[in-house]
Length: 256
Image (tube, rainbow, N blue to C red; front, side):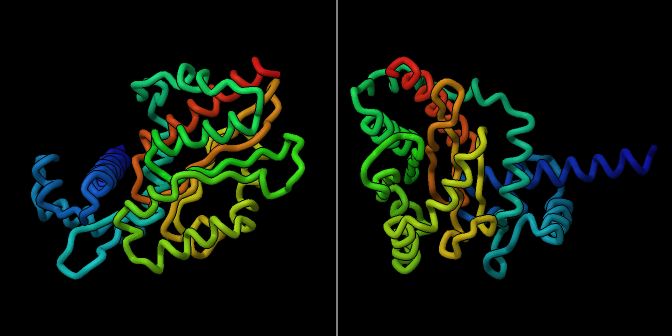
């Protein structure tokens, strides 16, 4: 029993340190040092460094430069997001009404609704947005794919390297590889995340893709998603995307 309690306490401290590293790095873009966490947790810097070493061994954080602090790995972000989705009530995190904003997009054209909703999603999350709707009858195959907010990618420090931003934009323009992901995600309901190396697209290994589906009469009609760096505000992006797709579903059911 004592050993089990010690094990649980150790896991809890690891989780708290990882949580703080993710949050600090997300807000500041900088590696996080032991001193900052030590002050917040009331533990010695030596203790925090030991916990950081444990997290490094688990491949949840890494040291980008010698003598620098730590940043999360893609596995670290995945652990953080999974914990977030298990314990958080996302419905209480939005301070705006997406139903009201989506209702203003009412149009005679379904494509127009999705295009405008995508723009709203990209603006609210400050990420690039993508949309795909395979169930709507249209003439041109490639027009099933929409993309919005490329400038948000360029504003993130992760993409200041011109070669990186060019590689990501090329994938978005070519569409085919990204469409494979969206076509897979549209098969099932719920939020899907592709974080870092989870992406099948090589040039997206430093990106996160998050998608959520919208429906008509409970049948999945398409998917809406955002693309950005792994260092994104998951607590804001996930509920925003989920709320927008729920609002789209309600609006489309009223229109049809």
